Length: 267
Image (tube, helix red, strand yellow):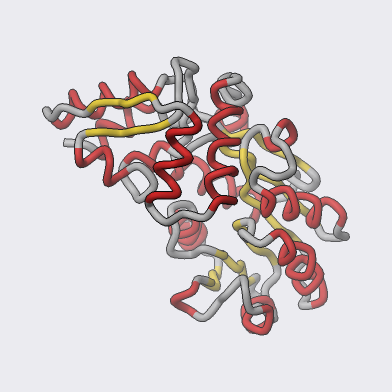
């Protein structure tokens, strides 16, 4: 019987690349997203996607209460392997920051399923797909950052590692820290994009309080502002600043650099 690989967030930044990588490898893919009827807030929508699937690529839910029931339902439906996308430095992150990721990691680790956790740094594509895209295109990016470098990771590399973990043995009970090959400050990142596009792009370094106020003014809830400020605090403290060789070791090639991303994406 052909294995069916379920991909959550199949239209998202990582999910759609995982779908492409799996299909290129010849795998049968089942795509789950709000567009196809999957809803983290409605557990009755999970079973139709899980039934018959043998493995799943999982994006942690926003609601931490959904993590354990989903993992239990996956096991009951016959899923045998989970590959979970999580955040770099989660083990050094307070439990009130990215609660969904904390709960998802706990759920998969405590399950009887084979599991692999991918802890990723900030994506390079955050500059060009949602997240910071509108501000970068408008010419002013305002964030609570300093000069601590960030080894931004390319989502194509994440997708390749996820595909490897989903389709090949040897990755059970492994946690991989996925980063780019070098650290780049936000100021340098913005300068590289500006140079490639020929447009002026300014980086405004906000205080955490000012960033919180900006997020709330844009209609984001207090808990999201707390989580994002917690993430940036960890970044300023260097929790995610050191590159790893996990991508190079797993894929047998260097991780994609920020310069390569800029060259491919920005004109």
